[in-house]
Length: 287
Image (cartoon, rainbow, N blue to C red; front, side, top):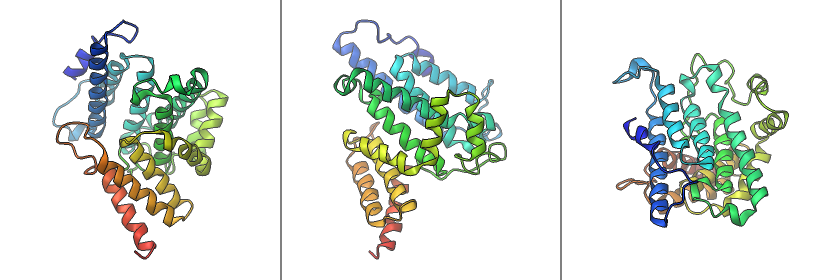
């Protein structure tokens, strides 16, 4: 939390920065994103925590998110995805109210990123930092939606547990009651797209497949390959295709640069999920 209290002093994007200052600014933002990812994984019930947070864990995490959003407008879009991933990953600890925020957050970012790419054009959109390019934000939102509605963590693909407070409407996160709860706070267009993306796997994966070639080698591309492989094996029973996609996810993870020194991307929850699913489809394919 001390780190995030200092982040608010970072120069805003509107301030003219020389190239070195801009590089330092974006390096700091990347570090901030990684720390938010780690913080999301460390969420525990209050009684299991080694230290107490006076205002509660979620409130403290929201303070970190607000600090990260200070970097700029499109950083705010990524911060909303990070909030959705954190909530989705900790589904078993959530109340119904917090659980119902996950899909609207992701769909909202997807819509705004899609509209931005249409407004400014693909070339201008791709000039942004990788993490906040509209195509990348769309792809991340779509992959997260697919994982969440299939009860896998949008943060790291781990299987989700359902808790006593959130489980009633989230037997499936795409249940009619869940969507009805969301409709009360969403515009008609957003709710219509939310319903489509959460219930129509073919539509969702078609959009993700279109974005896949344009996303460079990265942890996100590995997660996209995993989500596409999961769809191929679970929804389509296309096991040869699933085998190829799970292998591609593993290959990308093996080729990715570490986020921090000593980090090995393939030795991760995503790497474990991809390897287990790859093994399963190999057996189905008699290999």
